[in-house]
Image (cartoon, rainbow, N blue to C red; front, top):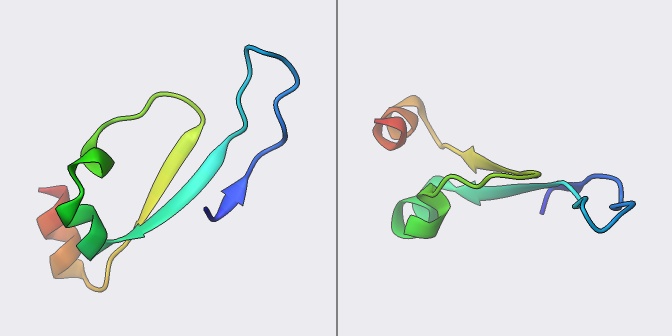
Length: 57
């Protein structure tokens, strides 16, 4: 967890979250490939351009 947003103020709201993972962890965990709707974002740290191009392909 890199950051959290403001606390939810009602039962229909959720607290935002920004998460981070490595390229290696992203490759081996298919759950991280799924699209998530809501107040969460995933940052994927890439060691180089070649790795980034491989993962986004």
